[in-house]
Length: 143
Image (cartoon, rainbow, N blue to C red; front, side, top):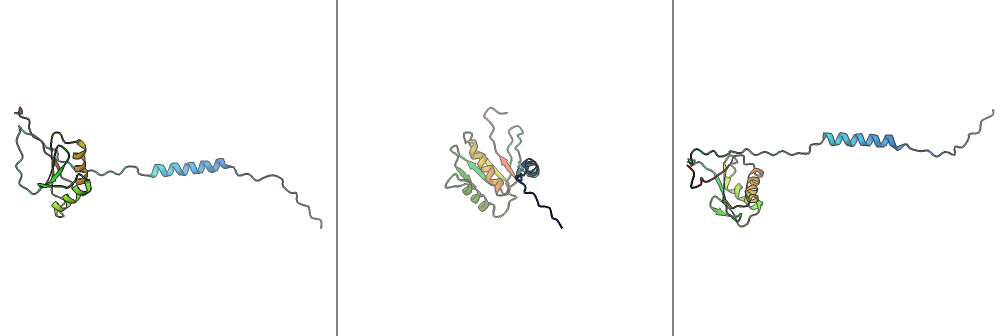
């Protein structure tokens, strides 16, 4: 029996990377398309309505946040030691006593920085309060 001698291949084995890159590209596109990029946290707002300068007479339990013109917070007539959101959140939880259904009433000075009002709204939302009111005052010339 005569066996043939195998020829040695002198060719290098190449891996074609183009199909591999295409497959990886499609996997990346699939992952990006299936991901969720937004985390929607919405807070229900009770916007105030004005009827000829009539004031709301409500003696129900509520938590009132008063913000001074420098951005200092007062929760139910108790001043906070600083303007940190964590301090505000702790004060809200303490005043609520576990009742997240209490309405939050924010009263801010006309010259209060916008950031302070947004911080108060954010703190209430992070702690799970859903009912929020913002008070306004009628101007002297209002009917």
